[in-house]
Image 1: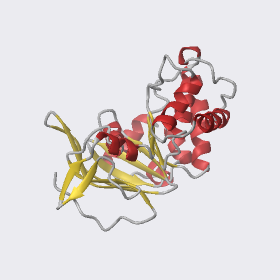
Image 2: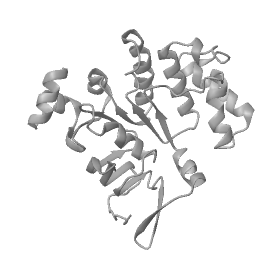
Image 3: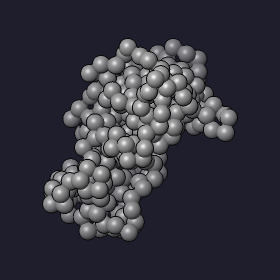
Length: 263
């Protein structure tokens, strides 16, 4: 894949996307996505199912390989290096090292069912970042208190509600001390009464200045917390702007039609 040069990179940019493309079996899913997210910014991505939102999120930490364009996190390409004008995929351990700076929370929690809550949280810091066990355990206990689950260290995922499992997943991601957090519809698998407890933790992270990209159907959360809202459809960013502007006065017919159906 040919490298793409850019002059937009600077210290304030956490995520930079230029002309990002992705296809599955020849079917384009992302079609030249351009986006810049600054450190400390909360960006919410909304749009209909199949618009490319989750694929875009997975491309940021190289869970999906991009087919074209440029994608950098904190100034570094996650899955590639550039050599003589072309991009070459990194080895697995190099990808893991760069991916460690990117926390990700999925729809389905993805906790290890055979591990306790504590073991789920300390596994990656110890194996990837080589953190000593005592330090990892102390950090895990602090994070569990932060997400409202102090005292549940020895519980197994099956013993927790969906909302509690998702909060453990957030603590697990934070244990890697990431530079950016990605959330892929983190409340979509939860019963309605459990959504609030997860959004509350996310609001606290936003208030603390964590850089966050959130794919969500929770438009109230996007309106309240986001600095910028992006509306995607058909693999493109159709519209973006501050939530007060995008929700109140969408500029495009497609965004206006979408919001008219979901608000």
